[in-house]
Image 1 (cartoon, rainbow, N blue to C red):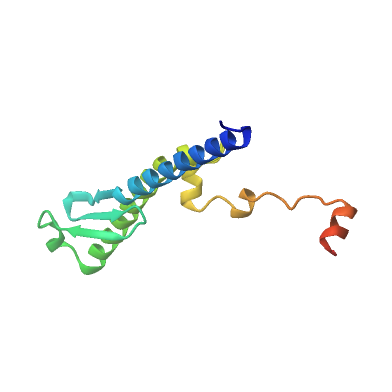
Image 2 (image 1 turned 180 degrees about the vertical axis):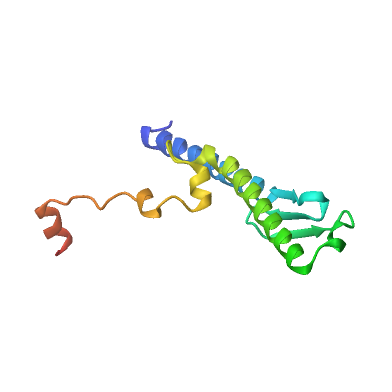
Length: 137
C-alpha cells in the first residue's frame, strides 16, 4: 500500500531522473558541435568545437601561398572568429529549450546577458524571521 508521501516521492524521483537525462542529452549534443568556416577564395578552413577551441585548420587550395603574412594572419583570425560565431549559434540552439521562458540563448552565449539579472533578489524578511535567524543588517 502506498502512501501519499511515497507517491509524491516517486513523482519527484521520476521528475529528477527525467531532468538529469535531459541535461546529459544536452551535454552530449554540445560535445558534438563542430563548426567550420571557409575563408574567401578557399584560402583556408577553420573548424572549432562548441567552446570555440580550434580543432582543425586546413588549406584546401594554394591561395594562401599568394598572400602576404599579414594578410594570411588577418584572414585566419577572421575565419576563426566566424567559426566561433557559428559554434556559439549552434550551442545556443541546443541550450535554448532548457532555458527559462523569455531568456535569449543567443544573448546568453554572446555574453550580453547580465548574470545578476538571472538571480532572484534577496527575499524580504519579517523582523521576527530576522530575530529567529539572528540576522542583522
